[in-house]
Length: 302
Image: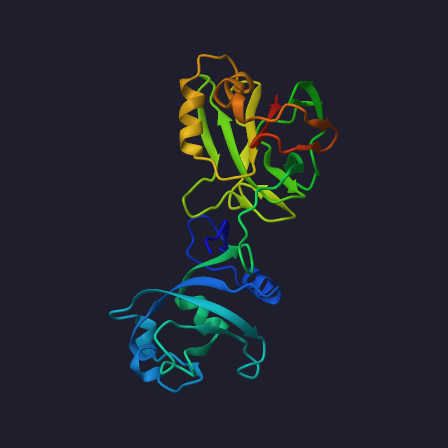
């Protein structure tokens, strides 16, 4: 089965440190986690028949080590007494470890692991496009101020009720009640557009059946000192879109404004009979007669 998407389980955008708490949460739901880990030394032939890996001082210097993909299939907070660990499934046959698996303590995993990814969907993948769109969107302030109130100013266009202070940091909040793919585009002061999310190939636009997500996860957006309005668009689809190609189409459009450019570039893909609701978050619901819906968010600042 081909996966629909994935989620990078890391503590930062560029920091190669895995988020072990997030890993445990996915494992507790029965979802294995794909990892990339530096291996070599005693992790190799010396692991035959061993239930756990206990790195030597030489291993910690990682001479001749290289990256290797494996799966984490379980965890036990007390497997080493006072220290917990992850159960790793390797691909080197049953001779490695115990039937191809071995325990690695949390501290050692933190030291040697570089990447971790949750894979969607869990279990058998069924390639059926959702028949409805059902989601809420908004701006979430980082200072604990909650969501910024929005009001409709056009079809699928929402603006802040009151300007926020320049320099304020925030994220875009998306809550989906059916599985979807989410893309975020921004508009420069010269009218050109750029991709805000996915911000690297390591990030997937796929959103599982339900959940609330903040974009960007690893960073924050900021109301800068330039101009009086920041404009962003959230594109939600029921199948993967080539977001680079979408952005190229937006930039090639002769229309004025991000909302008009989206209509120009994606008009044939956009649902028209959308039920909108405003407030602290925007509600959007419709039958998936077409493959996408788009929301333009205008953030006034002063």
